[in-house]
Amino acid sequence: MHAGKGVADAGVSPVVGMILVLAISVVGIAAVLYWGGPAVDEMKANVEFKAVQTQFQELDSDFRELVAGTAGKTAKRFQPSFSRGQFIVEKDTERWAIGVDYRSRVGTPSVYNFTLGDHGDGDNDFSLAHQGVGDFGNTVVVRAYVLDNAAEILTNVSTSSSSYAQMTSTTWTAGTVKNFWITKRNVAQSVANQPMTGKAFRIEVWNGADLAAQWWVYDAGRVHFNLDAGQVSRDYYASNGALVQCSDGFCRVDNVPGIPPGKFSGTTYRTFARMLSVNGTASFGGESRFDLILDLYSTVTLLSGPDVRALKMNIKGVLSKAWDNYFEENLSTFAMTKVTTVVGTSESYWLKTHPSYTAATCAMASSINCMTTTLVLSVVIAGRG
Image 1 (spheres, rainbow, N blue to C red):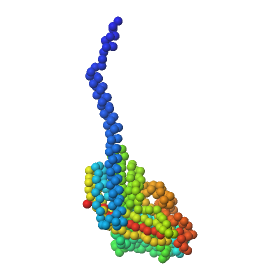
Image 2: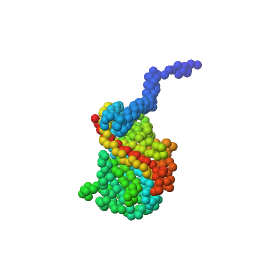
Image 3: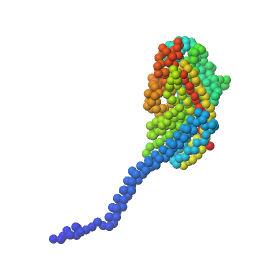
Image 4: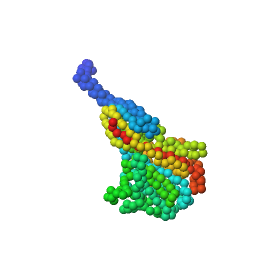
């Protein structure tokens, strides 16, 4: 009658119970560490990154005061502070090329249209695509200058990699691409090649005595903060007047850079661009508070004048997509067009023309619906104080 009583009354061994309690605790702690730890670190990284963003806004303000001349001095001290990550000043990054086509004053070709290419690979050659209306006779010459502070140093431009002399006039058929090589003047051929790095360059295209187009090429450089913590890698940049936030490869412009949309002044349509090149090198990591000296090296007005048929911007580098997104999101404001098909090259560029531009008006007979354009380039040297 009571044969099963011993089994029914039996309890769990205290030792086994303790083991179960410990196992449950260990699993719970492991789960908290596995899922909760990264979440806590992610929240911490977000707070740290927000603090750095605020400091970059101060850096942007310092840049703007320096280049506008409102700081009352030519140097400023920037003192960022961060607990993790790396702060870097990177020169020779973010290659920009800004060009203008002028109205044709001679009638042949009737429309000037040039696209600069192959300028970002660090050597001394570049290409130009002639997409205008009409062929050049034996009248076209290309010249190039190195911009050093406020001075321009004339170079030689040749149509052959084995030539070190300035080219003479040549013909040019519409819809074709020509390659050019830049060399220094009055030096031995062994050191004559002039790589398109480290300095700003100006390239001219002449049709006889008629200036057809100009391009300016420079490396914007950047001030860069990287925080590889939490669940994603975060980067923040100050480059060419823009503050750019990047997260796992997606980048966006956070402020309003110094490239405003064109606007009318009376009946004159004006375009303006203030470019900023950051030079120098510095790197700081870990828990750091340091001084970064920003020294205004030069401010040069590259262009200030009328009769511009088109303004073009070709952007290369890590942040080029961020600029693409910025212009695309503000198309109604900037009224710019992304040109992705350039004959004979893989180049693309952003195009700006007068809102009422037609080839018939911004042409030899009239400057109506041409633009008056001003381009200013400032160079700031950034280094550890």
